[in-house]
Image 1 (cartoon, helix red, strand yellow):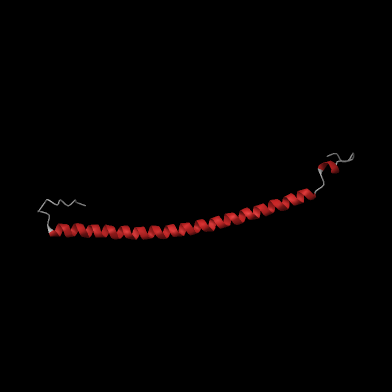
Image 2 (spheres, helix red, strand yellow):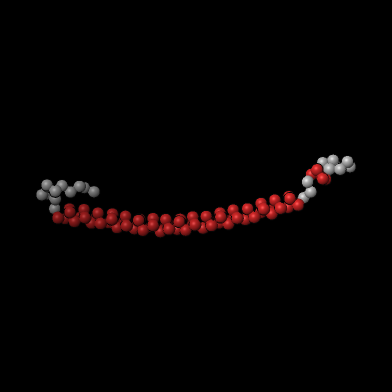
Length: 89
């Protein structure tokens, strides 16, 4: 895009109109791109919320599974009690 020289009286109204039309088209494209990026950002933010909720759920399930395993291990006889002369540990 050519720069407008304010001191140049040779710049015609047609040239100015063409430059303004070009600028208006660029502004319109920029506005559309901005709207697209806002929509994409909103979708990405929602996906982040979903993934964080899934992560939190998996962490809770992992903690519960660890607790169950710990309880099962605690119920087992200690290895020393299993050791007998016939069956060394």
